[in-house]
Image (cartoon, helix red, strand yellow):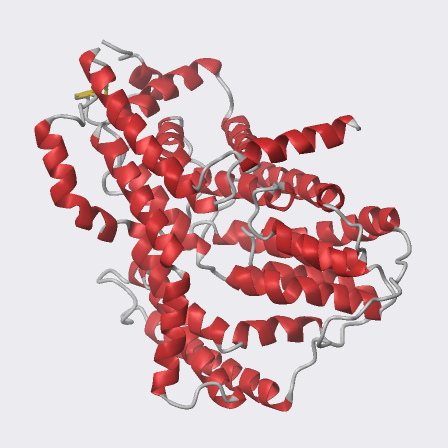
Length: 519
C-alpha cells in the first residue's frame, strides 16, 4: 500500500468515528458549561479593548444561569440569525427546485455546447448549480458523464468537472446564494462580542466570489483537460453498459417554463431597480443609503425563486392550483428538518459560549499571542484558510464548522485588524477547497455510484485521487486571489467592506488588549 493510500485510509477511518454534528454540539455545550465552572473558579479575566472593563468568565452552572437557559430556550432558537434567513430563502428556492426549474436551468447551460467548450461549460454549470446544491449533485453530476460520453470523452472526467464546480466551487457564484445569509448570520453573532453594533451585509463577499467564478472555470478546465483526462486514459465501455436515461434536452413545456421564469425574473429585477435606483426609493434609507436594499436581499431572493418556480411549474403541469404551490413549499420545509435540529444545537452552543464570556476571553488573549508573532495580515488569513481546509476533512458541514470556529476566530481577528467579512471569506476559501476529497462529504458515496456506472471497479480511493488535483488547484487559486485583494486593497463587497478592520476609536491596540492576561 502506498503512503498516499495509507493516509487516505487513516483519514476515512478517523472521520467515520466522528458522531453526528448535532451530537458534537451537544457534547460541546457540556464542555463549555464545565469549562465555565473551572475557569470562573480560577478567576480568569481580561480587559476588553473597547470598553476597558474587566471581562471575567461566568459560571454557567449557577442556579440563575440555568434558569436563564431554560426560560430563554425558545428565544435562543428563534433569535438565531441564520435560521430565519435560510428558511425564508428556502421557501422560494425549495419551490423552484421541486417544480424542476433549477434542474432545467442547469441542463440548458450544457445543451448544444461545442466540443471544445464542453469542459468549461460543465464546470461553470456546476459552479452556478450550487444555487441549489442537491439539484447540482443529483442532476448535473450524472449529466456531465452523459455529455462527455456522447462526445467520446471519458465520462468520469465529465463527472469530475461538474463535481468540482458544484462542490469545490461552493463559495463562488455570479449571484448571491443561500450560503451568504447562513454564514454571515453566524459571523454577525460572533462579531458583536467585539462591536455590538456590527451588522451583516449579505453582499460583503460578493465582489470576491463573483471574480472567483471565472477563475475556477479556467482552473477546473485546465486540471480536467491536462491532468485528469490524460490520467484516466481512454474509456473502455463495459459490455453490459446501459446509458442513464435522458440526454439533458428540454421538452417543449420545459422550454416554455424557462421562458416564463426568465421573463418573471426580468420583471422582478426591473421592480427592484425602480425601488432602489432613485435616491428616495423605497429600498433606500432616509439619507439615501442602500442599507434597506442590502437587508432585503433575502426577501428578494425568496420572491424571485417563488414566482419563477411557480410559473415554471404551471408551464410543465406540476402546479395546477395554489394548493400545489403550498404542498411543494411544505415538502421543501420538510427537507429543512435536519437543519432546524442542527440550528437548535448550534444556537445554544453559541449562546452559552457567549454567555460564559469565554469567547471574548479567548479572543482577547489569543489576539495578544498572535500579535506577538508579528505576522502580517495576509499570513493570518492564509493560516486560517489552511486550517479550515484541514478541518474540513473531518467535519463536512460548512455551517457546523463555522459555528464552532466563528465565536473564536472572528473576534480574535477583529482585534488584529482583520474584518468579520475577511475572516468569513477566509473560512469559505478553506472550506470549498477540500469538499471534494473528504470521505465525510455527504454526496461522495452518490458520486462514487455515478462513477461505477461507467467503470464498475472504480473505488473511493480512485475518486479521491481524481478529485485531489482539483482540490489543490482551487486552494492555490483562492490563496492567490487573496494576495491580489490584499495587494491592491480591493473591496470585498459593494459597501466597501475589505479585509482590514479598525476597532472603535476608544479601543486599545491589540497588543494592549492581550496584556491583561489571566488573573
